[in-house]
Length: 112
Length: 113
Image (cartoon, rainbow over the protein chains, first blue to last red):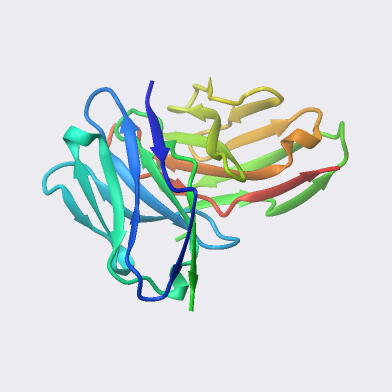
């Protein structure tokens, strides 16, 4: 069965610090991977996605993620976080006929 | 562009009451999903509909029923609400056989007292 695990449940950073959130997946077949962001009180919005090709994916707001097939990982990174990045971040797997499966989420708090 | 629309946005129920959460999408997607979001648990799948006319149980289906009314609409029903069903509910949709992401509604915050 497909599964997604996120290692960091709560992360607290100061502005301008670098961010890396871990995500590992267990999936049979061709995998599509996603990072979603949920700002306080809002719905999930797509940050970036990987389907195939270049394993380094760039998304909105300066975020990027790297797909490492040998490690079954899709970690999210941002070189310099801002206070406005305070949100919950979800890694997800699924694509085609597969049901989107989500990790438990990482709560990020950025102090100004 | 409306995308995925959920109603209501907020609801308070008494234990034992019933209600239906509505979801409609205007993107002509064939697959639709209901998730619940609880602190520290991420999004857990309640039910899904891979295509019009089909529905299947997800990870946490107990206490819920669904109806795929047509291609656009997928409703979630709580027949006898329990406090354990206090949660935020999200509806999502996507193309079933295309490599695309799921699109989410704004969510329904449900409290059962």
